Structures are given as C-alpha cells and as structure tokens.
Amino acid sequence: MKNLIIFIGLFLLVIAAGCEKQQTDFRDFLDGHEVTYTGSAGEVLSRAGNLRTQLKWKSSADPSIIKYVIYWNNKVDSQVVAINGKTDSVFVTIPNLQEFVYSFTIYSYDAKGNKSVPKVVNGVKIYGPIYKAGLLNRAYNADVPYVTMENGNVELNFNKPDTVNVTTKVKYTNTANIIKEVDLAPADNILKLTDYKPGTEVTYRSSYKPTSGALDVFTTSDYSVFPQMLLFPCDKSLFREHPLPNDVGTYESGTSVSKLWDRSVGPQGYPNIFHSNGSGGMPHTLTFDLGKVYPNLAQVEETGRDCCNNPDSFEIWGIADITNAATTLPANNGGWKDESIAKGWTLLKEVTRTDDGKNAYKTNLVSNPPPVRYIRIRIKHVTTNDGNYSNMSEITFWNKQVYN
Image (tube, rainbow, N blue to C red; front, side, top):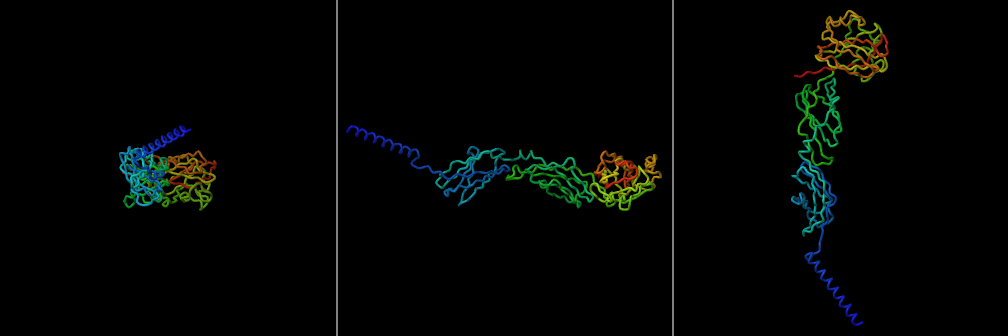
C-alpha cells in the first residue's frame, strides 16, 4: 500500500510538470501574448466604374477599429481607409484599375496593429475602353424611321433600347439655323422636333451604364447619322376645290370634295365623307387645287368610307397649270385618257386595291414626276360594284424634298 501511494504521487508530479511545459511552450509560440482579432467588414457591395470601382460595406461594431486596408493584385496594391468615430457604412472608391475582374481582401485594424480575419470580395468587374468600343448607338425604327407632319413637326422613331441605356442625345439644326441638342429618354421611343430645318443633318449619340447601379456612364465614341428626312406632307390648309367640266357632283353640300382634306383619321361615316351625287356613272372624275406647285410629289394615301362605295380602282392625274387643261370628253369615254395627256395631264398613279377599301392605303407615285399643283382623280370602280356612287374619307399627298 505504501509503495502504491508513492507511485501515484510520482505519476501526478509528472503530469503536472508536463502541463506546465505545454503552457510555457504555448506562451513561447504566441510570443507571450494572447491573439486579438478586430471586427471584420460586413457584406461588401461593389459598383462598376470606368477603370475604377466603389466598394461599400457595413462597418463593424468594434469601437477599437481605426482603419480598414484593402488589398488586391496579390497584396501588391492596397488602399487605406481611415475611420474617425462611429460609422454605419464605409464607402471607398478605388481608382486607376485595369479593365479586368478583380478580387479584393479587406482587413480592419486597431491602434495596436491587431487585424481582423480577411473579408474577400471576388468577381468585381472593371469596365473601360474595351467595353466602350463595343457600344452601339440606339437603333432607329428601320421600317418607319420618321414621320413628318403638315405643320412642319417631325417625329423620329427609335426602337426600344437596352435596359442599361441612360439617354440618347439628338443633335439637329433648327429653323433659326441654330444647332440644338435634345435628350431622348430610355422610356420614350418617339422624339418630336417642332423646329427642325428641312434638309439638315440629324445625328445622335447614346450613353449607357454597364449595370443598373454602375458608378459611371459610358458614351459611344461617335455620333450616328439619322436617315435623311425627304418626304413632307403637302399642306392641306392650302387645298381648294376646283371642279372642271364633266366632273362628278356631290350628294349634298356637306359631303363635298373638301371633306377629303379635313384631317380626319380613319374611315369616316356619313356625312363626314366625300359622297358623289350618282350622276354620270363610272368612271367619273373630281378635281382640286393643292394650293401651290410641288416639284416632286412622291406618295399618296387614300382612306375610304366606313362602310361602302369605296374606290378599289382609280387613277391619279396631275398638272401644274390648269389653263386650257379641261377635257371635253366625260371620264367614261374611251378617248378621255388620250385627251387628258394631250391637255398636259400626267398619270401619276393607277391604284388597284384588293381589300374592302376602308383603311388608309399608301402608295408611291411615279418616279421623276413633273411639277404638280392640280390633282384629278378618276374613279373607275368601287368595292360594292355600284355604277354611280363613290365615297372617300381622306386623301394625303407627300412631296419629296431634294437637297444639294
């Protein structure tokens, strides 16, 4: 029993000595100091920029922090962010970067040099000249790039932009010969110019952000040229009735030829239409004055009535001077066409519609037409096969501008 007690005592002394040695070794390994970590940065958000980025994170609640240090390029580069007092969030912009995808490591430090565990931010994309070189100006509507109005207003039609489009600046010359620049917002597809000078160049240039919350805006390198606006509607305020011998009459005074230029839109109902009086049969003619000479009539648009007697076969004739231009033969005479040509009239278009004749129908006139002021329409057939009556709602002509 005595020997057993001595053995146990010696064993405990060995254990105690071993523990003391381990603790000493641990202190030696830590250089006699405890390890202290400062609070680390919270979730980090980045904003894309032009050869730069902005990092934002929620500040640690540790009051001992005096600075954060951001490292990148394998700690070759760094930036210090001093902390003066309590702050909820930390913002820092890092400039002079390359167009590349970066990883950043963030440490916090206290006054004694203790630092936090690292906060690593991967996949931070930096944009620059390569991104800019790939940008294109916002596309215009190739089918209908512009619409010109009677009052001189012009509407430019653009396609829906990319989601990162910020604005498109449109530059043009106004009627006072002053170059103006206006903005087209991403939400708008139509830009109206109320003072555009016909024949002058329109250019445009778009700006983008690489991401919705990006730090910087990138603008395309060059302006693009908008398609030249050549077609302008003839001014209907100048139109006048000018009946010639053998022209068809109207059903009543309220359905006169002048209804064709009252600026109605879409097929109209009685009595807001031109309605012939039914005399003379088919074909029959009606004549009117455009109010001035147009050197390059290029297009016509005709709209029928909302129900019936719409022309589906008709001719459009034009002449500059009405003097001695009246034909002696009625329009249903086989010699009418030859007499019209002999009188100086030019056949601008022979129209054949295959629909019900109601909706607006636009078509080109002959190329290189002579100057025209007076229009004569020869209606040969209507959709209802009626042999006497014809109806129409509206007619519009466009003149092609020719610029040197």
